[in-house]
Image 1 (tube, each protein chain N blue to C red):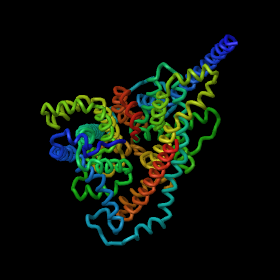
Image 2 (image 1 turned 30 degrees about the vertical axis):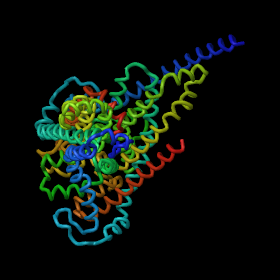
Image 3 (image 1 turned 90 degrees about the vertical axis):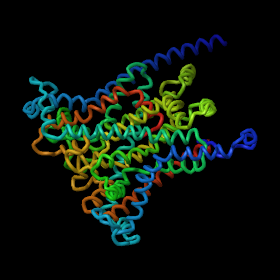
Image 4 (image 1 turned 180 degrees about the horizontal axis):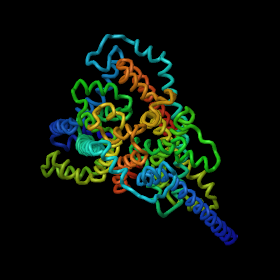
Length: 312
Length: 289
C-alpha cells in the first residue's frame, strides 16, 4: 500500500507556485471529509476499547453508571484463575478445531469441482452461498427441527439406513456434532466464493500447457492449482480461525450454551458475567484477555505471511 | 523424429483430454449432488411450513401434503410481532446502509485524493480498527450507550455499524482507480472538493456503493448479539432476535416456527438473488466476514 507523500518533491515544488497554501487548504478539506467518520469511529470503536480497558480495573457493576471501587489487577487475576473462563475459552477453541478443517478443505474441494464446470455456475452459487446470507436465528430454527429427537429429519434419515442417532441437542457430544454440521452448512459458501475467485485468477493457458505436456487432472491439481492457491489458502485459514473463535449466535440460540454449559463459548461467558450477574468490571477483564488473544493470533499471522512474502 | 514426437504428443494430449473430460463429468456429478444436499434444509423448511400441523405430527418427514395451507404464515403474523420485527429490521438496515455509504465514502475520498497532514496516521488508525473484533466489545459498548442514553433506540443499532473500516478500504481502493488527471482538471476549472466528490467521484463509484450497501444491509439485518442486548421490548426487536425467542417456546407449532424462519430469511434471499454477482464479487475482493 503506497500513500502519497505530503510534501511535494523538490522538482515539483519549483513548478508549483503555491505549494504551502495548497497543502494547507487540502488539510482542512481532508479533515472535514474525515470528520463524520472519525467522530463515530472514536465514539463507538476506539471508545469502547478504552472504556473496556478502564472498567477492567474497577469493580464496576453493569447496572450502575459509576465505575465502582478501583481494584487494580484483581479482575485479571480472577479471570485468569477462573476455571469457568478457561472452560469457555476451551469451548471456543474446540469449536474452532472442529469446524476449521471442514470449512477450509470442503469449500476448496467444491471450488475445484466448480472450476471444472462451465455451465450453471449460478446454481452452485445459490446452493452454497445462500445459507451464508441468512440470519442465524432462521438457521437455528430450521436445524432445531432437523435435530429434533424422534421426529427430526436427521434422526429419521439415520434410522432409514439403520444407524443409531446421537442425542443431537441433549448430550455434549451430540451438541458439538450438531453445531459442526449446522456451521459447516451455514458458512461454507463464504470460503467457497473466496476459493472460486482465486481459481479464476489462474490463467487457463497454464492448464492447457500442462495438459499438452501430458499432466493428468490430478497432477495439474497438485502442481498448478494448490501451489498457486497457497496465499488464498492461508488467508481463508486465518479468517476462518478468527471467525470460529468469535462463535456465539448458533450456540446461544440452539443450545443456550448447554447441555449444562458444556458448550458455552467465551463470548457467552462474557455476556453471562456481564449481563446476568452484572459483574461489569470482571467481564471487561475477560473481554480484554480474549481480545488480546485474538490480536496476538492476527499479529502472528501477519508477521508470518509478511516474512514468507519477503522470502519468496 | 520430430514428426514422431509431435504425433505422440498429439495422442497423449488427446488421451488426456479424454481423461480430463471424464474427470470434469465426475466433478459435475459430485458437485450437483452436493449442492442438492445443501438445499435440503431450505426445501424441507419451506415444504413443511405449508403443511397442516396434524399432518406434520403424523409424518414429519413427508414432503407431500394433501391439504397445502398458508395457515402457518397467517398464524406467525398473528402470534408474534413479526410485523414489528420486519419494520424494525428494515428501518435499521436501510438507515445503516445510507449512513455507512455516506460517511465511509467521504473519508475514503479524502484518503484517496487529498493530500493532507495526518493522513498517514489516520490510515494506520483505521487499519488498526480492522483488527478489533466487535463481538468482544459489546460490554463496554453497552455501558457507553447507557451513559449516552441511547439504549433501546434505533440509534444504538445504527451508529456502531456505520464507521466501518472495511467499507472505507473498499471505497478507497475504488476511488484510487479514478485518474488524478480527471480530478486535477476539475480543480483547475474551479470545482470545490465537495463538488468533485459529489458530482464526479460518487457517480463513478456506483459498484463500490452497491457492494458496501448490500453488505451493510446483510450484516445489520443478521446482527444478533448486539440487538439482543440493546433492544429489550418485544415490539422493538429485530427479526433475528425475535425469531430466536421462538426456539423452544411453548404453544407454537412446528409449521409456524418454520414459517417464521422462512419469513425471516426471505428478504435476504431476495437481496441475494437480485444482487448475486455483486455479493460474490464483494466477498472475493474484500474477504469481508
